[in-house]
Amino acid sequence: MIPIAKPIIGKEEQDAILEVIASGQLVQGPKVREFEERFAELCSVEHAIAVSSGTAALHIAMLAHEIGQSDEVITSPFSFVASANCALYVGARPVFVDIEPDFFTIDPQKIEERITKNTKAIMPIHLYGQSCDMDAIVKIAEKHNLVIIEDACQAHGTTFHGRPIGSFGTACYSLYATKNITTIEGGMIVTNDSQIAERARLLRAHGSPRTYEHVILGYNMRLTDLSAAIGLVQLKKLNEWNSTRRSNAEYLTNGLSEVKGIVTPKIRENSDHIFHQYTIRIADRDNVAQKLKEKGIGVGVHYPTPIHQQPLYKDLGYSDILPVAETASKEVLSLPVHPALTKDELDYIIDTIARI
Image (tube, helix red, strand yellow):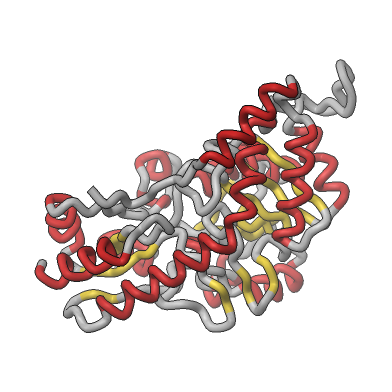
């Protein structure tokens, strides 16, 4: 089986874990601080705050910006459900805007029509490693005095006009096992705002600036030094792995471009797509997906149901009609693109799809 994702954990990561175990400093220690410093450099920001998951990062970012009851957060319906759920966690209401058909990211041309007096934030989602149109989103946010919270959970190393994703507002990353780099489980918040950074640090650790002093209601959402040690090793490899992903994606696109009925991924002009997922569109998606699995090729559907159509959101009264996202959910199919793929495996994927 060619897997859809393949986390690469080697001897260097294993040695880093053993070093931490031997040190006895296992949680919120020097490895976490070093990992935060290196991650802030990646995003060209002043602050990085390591937390226990990408979902925790989004949740804390909402709280740090004091988003709460009666507030609205504009976001995309085409994402993993955690994006919108984190607005619900704090009592806010996600407001969904349809996506761009070429890039699967929020359509900035449709944002302003959904802004109300209760709108407090825009949460663009850089899906599959593709940047949103941040020039347009920043202009809208500045015009309406809105916070930007970037969901960069799939965008480690993505850039827009040469500027790192994660530097346009407060941003959140996932470090889950299948991401472009991993700490097995973990997340990161990045920002240039010192007040937001300090509040996020308090929120992740029981609201405690020092031992047994608690100044706000906080949570236990810290990252371990074991995880940070893995992350430090993985960060060194990110550029090479992203380069390999882009090369694999280009190879797949060249091989599939002449196959009838397939729409290959498009890359936004002046952006650096890091291909967390390589996602095609195909009308007979479910049938093709099943046949590929039977031929030993792992595939994924990201995502089969837009968030506004999930049972939870229907129960909350959502009845949006968002045709671009709804059509995409029936057509998208993610193929293996990870750095461990061989040329023979890429050729096999291309040839098998062509035969199907």
